[in-house]
Each structure stands twice: as C-alpha cells, then as structure tokens.
Length: 408
Length: 210
Image 1 (cartoon, rainbow over the protein chains, first blue to last red):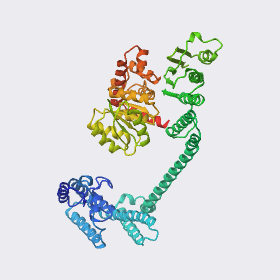
Image 2: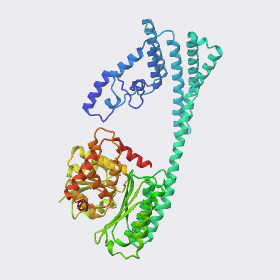
Image 3: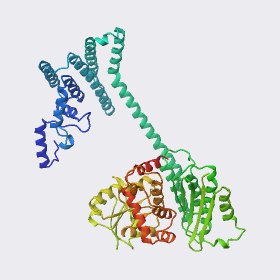
Image 4: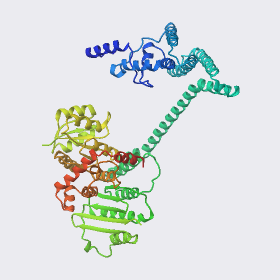
C-alpha cells in the first residue's frame, strides 16, 4: 500500500479494492487491458500462465472472453487506483498446485455444463500451457542472466531444464492429439505431418530463445552506434571548438576574437543542425552561405543570410552566386555598415537575391568609370547569364543590390 | 516602466542581460529552471518574459505553455542560441510573440521588448525567412485557405524584414505607416499560431533532415 496516500485517496483505494477483488489492471504490461498481468501480480505467478488460462477458458465456449470482459469492468486501472496490488511473495509450490487444480476443476465443470468447443479443447489446453512453460523458462533465464550480471557469483539451478522438458512433452502430446482428431490433416500423409510437427516443435522450443538472441544483438548494435556517435562528437569538438577556444585565449585583439568566435559558431551550427554529416548537396543557399562566411572572415563584418525555398545549384545560377559574393564583399569593404543582410528567394520562375547594407551608401552617378566592381562583376555578369542586376543606393542610408536570375 | 522577467539556465547570460536591460526595464525577477520560472512569472506577472528555448526539464516550450494556461495576458519573447527552424516555429506556435537569437545587440533586444510589451510581434530576418518558406506557394489542401495563406501584402512585409530592414524602414519603403506594418506582422503571427496545416510540421522536420 502506498504510504503517502491521503485519507481521501485511502478511502477511495479501499472501496475500489473491495469492488475489484483486490486486483488492479496493469498499465505497463498489457496485451488487451492489462488484466492478466494484474491477476498474475495479485497471485504471485508469472503473467504468461494467467494469459494461458484465459486462452484455454476461451476455448470452453468463449467463457474466457466473458470472464475477461467482466474482470475488465470491475477492476480499476493501476493509474486510477494509484498503485499496483501485488502478492507479498511469489506463489509457493503448494499454492501453484492449488491454483492449477482449481483451474482444472473449472475446466471440467465447464465441460460438464456443455460450455465446450469440442474435443479439441483438452489437447489445445495442453499445448497452450506447454508453450507457457517454455515461454516462462526463457523469461526466467533472461532474468537470471541479468541477475548474474549484477552478482557474478550467483548461478542458476537446473529448474529450467525440467521446465522445458515438461513443456515440450505437454505440447507434443497436445499436438499429436489435435492432429489425430483432425481427418483432413491425416490425408496429407505421415511424412508431411512429421515435418510439420518437427518444425512447429522447434519453433515453439527455440523461438523465444532465438528472439531473445536477436533482441540482444540489436541492443548491442544500438549501443555500438551510440558509442560511435559520441566518439565522433568528441573528435569534432576537439578539432574545432577546443582549438578555437585555445586560440581565443591566446588572442588579445577583440576584433580577432569576435571573428574567431563567429566563424566557430557558424561551423558548429552547420555541424549540429545538419547531422547527416554528408558533403554539401550543392544548393543555392549553401553556396551563398559559404560566400557569406568568407566575407565575414575576410572583412570582419557579420553577414546575416536568409534563404527561402532553397534549390539545387546549377550552372545557370553560378553567376548569381558570384555576383552576390562580389556585392557582399563591396558592402563589407566600403559601406562601413555593422551588418550585411542577404536575402535569397527561390521561386518557380526565378532566383532573387538582395544584398542589403545600411551603411554609407553612394551616388551611382558619381562612380568613376575605372571602378569596375559594380559594372563588371555584378551588372555585366548578370546580363551575360540572362539575368539582371539593380543597384539602389542613397548616400548615408545604405545600398541594396538586387540580383535576379530567371529560369531557362 | 515595462516589467520583464528572465528565464535562462545560464547564470552568466542572465546576469549579462540583466545588466544590459536594467536601465530601461524593471527586471521583476529571473529563474534558471522551468518550475521556478512558472511560479515566479505567475507571482510577479511581468509584462514581458524573455525565455530561453533549450533548458532542462521541458525547456522554454513548457514555460510558455504552462503560464499561458493561467495567464494568457503575459507576453513571451523567445531568446535562444538556436536558430533552427523547428525550435523557432515550435516556440511561436506555443504562443511566443517573437523570437530573437542571443547574438542580437542590446539596443535591438530592448526595442524588441518594447514592441512586444506594446502588443506587437517581433520577427527577426531569419524568422521572417522561415515563415515565408513554410507558407510557400504550395496549394493548400486544408479547408481554411484564409488561415493558411499569407496575403501578398503580408508576404511583401516579411520579405522586407528578411532583407534586414527595421519596421520603420519597411513602412517607408512600402509607403505605409509603421502601424500598418505592425498590423501585418501581428496577422502573420496569428496565422502561424493558429494554422493547423500539416505542411508546417512537415516543413520543419524536413529541414532537419536536409
């Protein structure tokens, strides 16, 4: 019982307990509603036997389904109740035998009342409980394995061998009886039956074990991958971030520190938010971002890049990227602006780029002819590729270069 | 004086921001974890909360969500080192009125707080870009086209913001009043918060993979 329960909760718990016959439905271990796990916890037996019991009872004219539904209605959920009602200790051998005999008695009574799906029920019950025994063995073994990991000295007994043998025998008898009672399968011929029997037997005997092995393997693989990722990250952080931090500590020029920090930040962001670690796929946005970071490093001016509707970079778009790069460099070198904004928008018809600074600006009319920066690198380059370039600048307000490259 | 509350798990950053903002704002308090923040904000009822996105215990998302449930009138400005689209969009969808990165200069941060206190939304160039990207020209499948589309004018305002212009400059360039710019931005924010289209989520998740 939960010690921290308030009186109100306590009262509620007591009421629910009386209503439900001291059984709660499990929230964690459930196939349908968690009733089997709840009953198993209350009785102190492995869940798999309770499940087997419900399954057998279902063959008795569907009685198991009826019981399950009734149980579902009257028992509270673990969460609703507040905690799980559990037996103080696992059922003793005597209790186990008692439960088994009680269950047998119920089955016999049901047969006597005619709630019965025919001769198949008894052998099927044998098969079900045989399988349950084997299943329980496998889970007991994995539990044992876990406890052995924790306490290396402790070693499991031979109980599981007996259990598997009894389980297999029960199943074999059950299967033979079922097959003997079904005429249609007999017509397949004894060889086919033998093969089927052997296959089914192997599956039931070794299935849980193979499954466990498989799970274990994939667990190990996952752990290895995690370890690998951690090592990659450590290596990357060491190569980049730690190096940069060391450089910053040695540097006494604030501007240089800022530049280093920004370059590192950009690098780390790329690495963190594009976790595939693949080579750049070659999009317009990546090319512009690369150009921007070069300008940042060369001129110590932050460049803010925003890209909308990124798309693959093709030859037709190279001039746009080159002209953008030139425009950024111009802005960084001449405008004196604190930051440069680059906005690229890729639509179905065209790619547009705006390179904006809010710096000194200039009067386009007064630019001497021998200054080829704008006319050659930007305007003419765009014109040659079938695009266009517009430069708008007002002294003391800033400059905006608009580049447009249409789709061909 | 506008009262503000700071939530960030980095003490150093908290004290830095506090020092920068204490002249212009009444700093009502600060917290370094989610639960303390939710209690503190409910107690002090500041005008604007500056909230970090990545924190242990649910992060900024749960602060915004929890407080807005009881105090829908408190406004949030998300402040983060991350400008990953999924973080930005998630915070806005949770109810934050703006999103700025921690590299913002103090002056711009103060302006952003004033603007949010006045009931407007704050879009950084990056956020404007994300929104334009998310509401790109794909044909809406959902039933509510009003909500799922930006008007041409809203789109134009966002483009100007993405190009690095302040609200005042946007107003001049588009020959409209600053108030109109603010109205457009608030409308976009509302669409972003209410829009139920799947594309938004898909867009954000795709961005992470690309």
